[in-house]
Length: 409
Ligand SMILES: Nc1ncnc2c1ncn2[C@@H]1O[C@H](COP(=O)(O)OP(=O)(O)OP(=O)(O)O)[C@@H](O)[C@H]1O
Ligand SMILES: [Mg+2]
Image 1: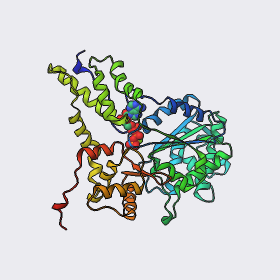
Image 2 (image 1 turned 90 degrees about the vertical axis):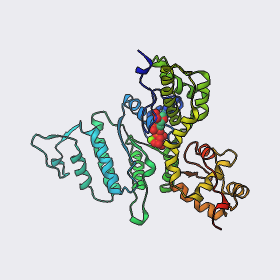
Image 3 (image 1 turned 60 degrees about the vertical axis):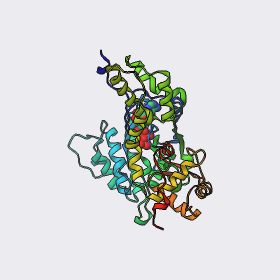
Image 4 (image 1 turned 90 degrees about the horizontal axis):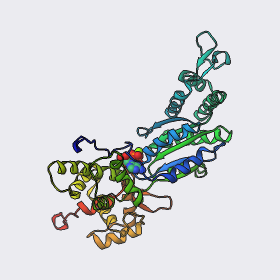
């Protein structure tokens, strides 16, 4: 097979399974431990910055769980920013129905849940049956959901398939809305806490950005004890190497990356999985073309970087104001800009670098709106960091302060 017939194996893209998923042994060991629970004392929060690999890791959790006898119900909550308690209930019922649909139950009409089925005494445990249980349960939304989950569990248990994982991605989108008197996040936590206390082995796995866990704890303080937090970060050097090299090695591909190329990809991606896939994909294409043209193989890192800037960073950068950009530029100049900083560190640096600095309260307010825009993340002890990986490098690479002389005074 010629090189040009080799398909590019790398997979940059949200939720795209990489050709080789590197370095998650610790996470698998931890997840296996959670799967071993008979009574659910700990649920899982899987968190980390954009593009670190939460979605694909969660996808690989599913077969592991199934192999251990768990059932798996899952959904993506990307569109759930305005979810109400009612829609949360619909979500849970719909996900549950997919796994109960293979069960048959005695005709519930005779059990007083108000469902009329065909003659014959047995019907499948379909969505409409779950919905009927839900509707016929008096009380608050949380009571209705609990009763429905308990009902489903009774039947699953009879089939010896009683352990279920409810896995939700992009769960940072769930919010309580006091102004609308809608508390779907609290309802979700209350429901699982309550049924787990009764010994029902339904486990929650929530994946999301670093705002997720603080949000859960804000909604219900007991969430702190209810979840095991797994934070995904950049890959270490060995794991990055494997993520870069294994895909072409395993495909027995004639394109090879030199040690220098690997070093460069490692350095430019800083071990962030999305960037590894992105850069490797470009490098692979270029090597194939260079080879076809008889050229030497060199990594055109600047061109790749520009493409990455345009594809990944530019859109986010375009959505903020000039003053916000100045502030992020200052953050990028802090020592350890990849790590945490305080408002005081920021305002001191701004004084040194900008013609016009920020007052602490102004900085606080601007950091708040940058947090809402997903550029900045504030942790639970009040320290800030970039919410987008390698944003600091992008800023230093591409941004210049506007010339103060050119501005009207
Ligand atoms: N362990 C890994 N080894 C190699 N590549 C990986 C690994 N984990 C993820 N990737 C790659 O990184 C990219 C991002 O993965 P994924 O979409 O799962 O991240 P995410 O954390 O869910 O991001 P987001 O916050 O945007 O949803 C994908 O292209 C994926 O193939
Ligand atoms: Mg994701």
